[in-house]
Image 1: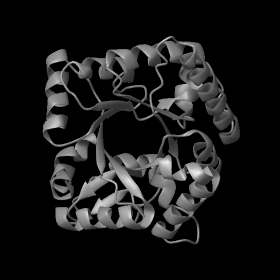
Image 2 (image 1 turned 45 degrees about the horizontal axis):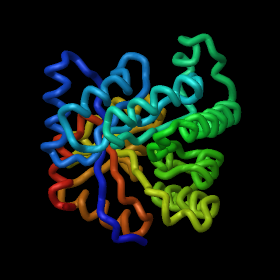
Image 3 (image 1 turned 90 degrees about the vertical axis):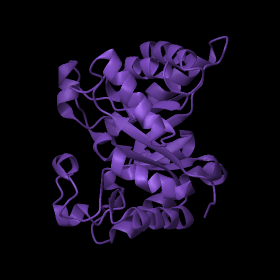
Image 4 (image 1 turned 60 degrees about the vertical axis):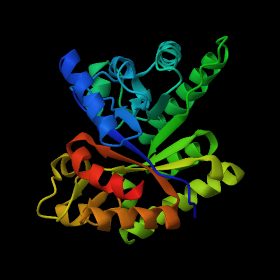
Length: 280
């Protein structure tokens, strides 16, 4: 489908001290990653301050993976995005999602709402934020990443996203094998995007990496997805095998599905760096 070069991102969880954060940022770059990402959950690093601090010690790109638009004000978001864009010398990638953790809405006094309500909030927040950014004299407009797996999110991304990240659930559809479920979602995105599909970068979120199923740590995604280990190890977002086998699988994903941007979680960044070396 495409021969575009790969990009690789890693999501870090905790800042710690200033010196510890700077050391881990340098490690990310030394391991060969192109993008340092920070998620948006209570109990982990505050994404925007962490990314600005990282900009001082690395030249790679920096992104949110992803901000919870359901609890954000467009006015404050636009203000923060504009300055993060400036303070990172234009290396910022703005990742946005609809939010999926009820406790995070409760913590700020907002209703969790239905999936449709959260998606509509994401759409209006994105539109308003873009409008506010466009009104700035220097037009600080970072690339927009949207992430998820639902059909309505895919259709929104087809209209609005520069990057789309397929979540771990992109390989889950009742009655379909994981890769067929994944292919169906890519077809939905392509249909929604029309002529602009070629301009959307496809990202695959990798939740776990390991040489064998009995050695890979699935704890984080087991809790988040509700799937058992047998189901999880068959998903496109879980990579099991030797570095060479995983590299070959990602080469196939690029050819068959158009995936050229791959993001992993921090616990797997050293193991996945072996794969990166084979794909450069």
